[in-house]
Image (cartoon, rainbow, N blue to C red):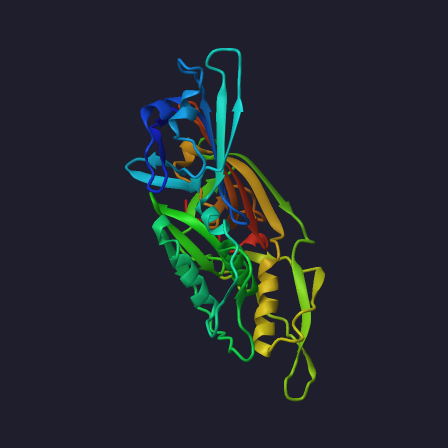
Length: 373
């Protein structure tokens, strides 16, 4: 199905376990698509269809079973010859808006991304003598039928049974996030291609080729219809804490530690003005206390944020959350590279395709004199 007039095509696959191309009856009823990709939470989708009643008085889309709960949905767009998946999710909610005017009744189906299947059942398990990374890999591999491919960063802390045994008392998704959190890592699932997704468990990724630049205020060369930066000096948070040396029983302060956010993105990082006391490090060994302090620093928010909206046809690409993107034309303080915090895709087939974005970084001043176009 065409999006607008420049040849971007919408892809919709739906099915119980293995999604298949949606039938023409479903595609012709599709009215609006919203996809949320957010680095801080679950991704989600919302699809709105027009409804019509059959001879028996029932809504035909409902009776078809295509939009039933637990149906897997893959939404993407086709730019040229390469399909770009936006989300692989599961339907868990629908809402009907009836109308007395023919052809105006609608149904909206919603759902989270495929990570929701990891969040359905709480478990009580223990993992003896295993690193957090090994535990994460084992859990992700249990969901291979959903096309999940683990991408796990190794950790080195091996808990000995007489000292500590990692225990799970929550769903797999909550446990994976807790393990990631205490290592200063993140966990998310991102579509790699149609039907295949990467389950990423590791530190925030700032490597790789940045996405095509967002161009602000350059007339016909621009691709951003709105760009609003802001600087919150109270967003960064520093840490203070200590641990007890096991032999002398002396309390030793945790030293100030550099950020693990590499590579840096700015010339002038905003220093933390607030301090958080690490109250649970006293009982940890030096390595665990240091990792806890680093993890707390990694969770701190970036001081500089920017939001705006893309002209998708001028941009000619999909802006991806959790990756880097360059900005140019916003002035020396706000030009340069940012991490894409979230992207909301709004598609009205045959009418428009908008991408609303939120960016984040640690301070002001571009680190490099230019960004990749």
